[in-house]
Structures are given as structure tokens and as C-alpha cells.
Image (tube, rainbow, N blue to C red; front, top):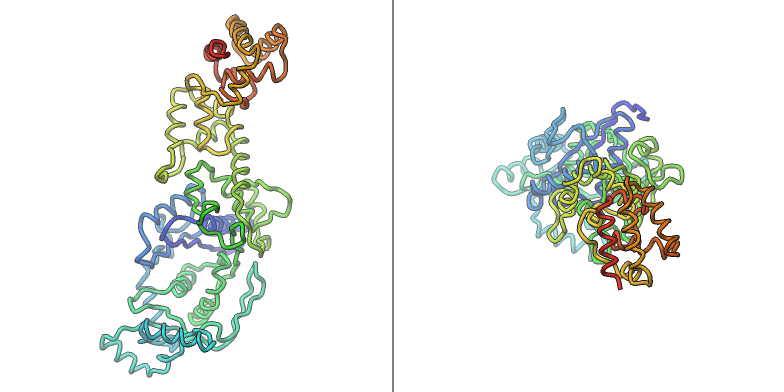
Length: 498
């Protein structure tokens, strides 16, 4: 149940330099849950000031993945809002204005050091065992002299003059964290190109957009002292922070894409046939504890349970097998209508080399009436762990003669299997009304006549009907296949079994 907390405003701020990482998706979900639980605002801000790596295509892909996950935002580049624009590339005049204010107040200064000079000094500091901070060379320049050099065309950046004092953060996850004086040197806020640095743009935007809580990955904890300094210089109260533990590889390193590890892009799981409900349910439990032993929570249940004090401090290992189990759980408990909706929505463009299971599913289901389509999907859902596996399950029932799996072929080659299939086909042909119960009674009667029961009765029949030794219960299978197809497959098995 939402608990109104006046003024809650959170943000998710992706950089459009690639795909949406599963860790980013979890961060977005935690922000979304917090905003919705407290009747607050969820803001989407695109941090696209990395001109060399940012692209419109990446932005569209990230936003598409967020929409697929169902994480709607209240303000953003596509929906607008009172604190726009919501792309940093469209906010450059605001950064210039705030930087000039800091310069005029003596909280920032012009720096004329070149990249080569800075690198040489950094290497010298490291060699001497000193922190590789900026050495303050341009901080001592008289403002008038610095202004004259800049007006003369000499390239310069703007640096923030870091105060020599401790900074303390009271983090909702980490507790009290103190950053001692000197941990951060004078840092660049505007590059010589005029583009803002990450920490400067982030602090300016969070202040301007009235962000009340920043929920982000713990790797950003190191950025916090710079941002606290900037809030102080702006005369703004900082937001509350919650730095969430990282998602880890099996060796407990930060989750990254490499050989032998699970996919890190949401789009890869989407293309593989995973459903958003399973993805969100799994990601939420990587770093969040609902207060009980539940492993599968709906969005509504997570909204009820989510609080910042239930976020853990320790990293969580991403387990692809557990995610697959959770995805299978969602499929196995879904209605036919939900399964059809998932198949219709599907992913966006599939990666090269990935079979388009969506198109195949739609092709197979298209001839069926709406009611029969949902009944068929419910009948086969128990065999599928992903949506991508559903077309193969559907094809067994609506296609032609099924291909025989090795174990099924062995079952049909057993003594008496041909006679059983032939006798059952004859008996089914005399049924006046087709139903699962009628099929069940007929197969039991045929078994008694043939002196067969248990596996030696049911396995050859299943193999004849599906080419497999597992699947839906036989009465349901009979209803899904229909009388004509059941009889035809049994007759075919009788002719071809040795």
C-alpha cells in the first residue's frame, strides 16, 4: 500500500552508450518501487554528454527495455515535465551558468594545465607515494590574470576548489560514511570543450530537478564527496542517498560480460524469451530482502514490502539457473491469455543469429480460434522455461507428424507397441463424442484388452502422439490434438513401428 512521503522524487539516469545492464535495470526498479510506494515522482534523465559514445539508437534501446519491464516514468525526455529538458546535452547553458556562479564566488578557478602536463605530474606523485591529486598550480592565479589568458584564447577548464574539510554521508544502506579532508583534490567541473563532467552535471541536475533520494549502485559512493561539496557550494541541501550493493559474477567480481558468465544486457534475456515479471522479481531479490522467505514476488507484493532499510550491504551473485527457474515459474502459472500477450509483445529487434521465435509462434497459432489458442498455450506451458521454447511445444500439437526423440522411438519399438497403437486408433474412431475423459476411458479399456498398464501402456501412446516421453496429461493432450489428429498419429505409429 502506498505510503505518502511528501516530496519524494527519484531518478534513473542512464548513459546512452550501449545497452541496459541488468544492474541498471535493478537500480531503475528500486527507484520506481520507492517512488510508487511513497506516491512520489520517478524521473528519467538521459546523461548523454559523452559525445563520442552516446547515440540516439542506444537511448531508444535503453528506453525500450525500460518500457518492456513496465517501469513507466513521470518525467523524461519523451514525456516532458516541469524540470526539463531531460537530456543533459540539452542543458548545457544551465551548466555554464552554475559554473560561472561558482567562478564568480571564488569556489572555482580556471585551469590552463594541458593533459600531458597533468599526466606527468600524476605519474610523479604516484612514484613519490603521494595521492595523484591536482597540485593546485592554477588555483593561485590571480582571477584577473586568469580571465585575461582565457580572453586571449588560451584553452582552459574550470576546476572546483575542494574545501579542506571532512564530509560525512548518512547513507540508507552504508550507514555513516566519512570522507576525510584531502580524499578529493580540486576537480574539473567544465572541460575546455565546455562540456560538464559527470559529477558536476549530476549535482546540478539533481538540485534543479528537486531530487529527494538518490538510489544507485555502490560504485558511485566514491563520487559522493564531490557531489556533497557542490551541493554545499550551491547552497542546496543534498538528497538522501542509498548506495546499493553490486550484482556479482560467480567469482564475486563486478558483473561484466565475459566468457562463461551470464548475459549482462536486459535485451539479451528479452531476446532469449524471458518475461519482464520474472526478470524484475529475480533482480529485486538481488540486494533486497522482503522480510520473509518468499522467492517469487509480484510487482504489487514488492510495492508492499519495499523499504530502503531492507536493502543489503553485501553483493549478490547473479545465478542464471535461478533466473531460468523463476521464468519457468511465471510461465507455468500464467493464463493462456497472458502467454499470448507475452508472445505478441515480444522483444524488439533480435540480435543477429537469434531465431525469431516470436514469428514462429505467431505463424503456428494464427490458424487457431482465440479460445483454442489460449487453451493450447496453457496445455504446453509446463514444458517451457522460456517463451522461445513455446513454438517448439506448440509445433508438436499443430504441425504434421512429430519428430521422434530417441527415448520415444525406443518406446515405440518395444514388443506389442504397434498392436497397442493400432487397437487404440480403432477404438477411438468409434467414439461418438470426443473428450479428454472419453479418451482416458478408451485407453484404459484398450490397455486391459492388451494386458498393458502403467508406463508400458501410456508411454507408447504419448510417443505416438507427440514424439516425446513427457508433456501434458494424456486426456488434455487428446483434447488439444483432436480426434482426427490423434487417430492419424496412432495409425502412423502402428505402421512404422518395428
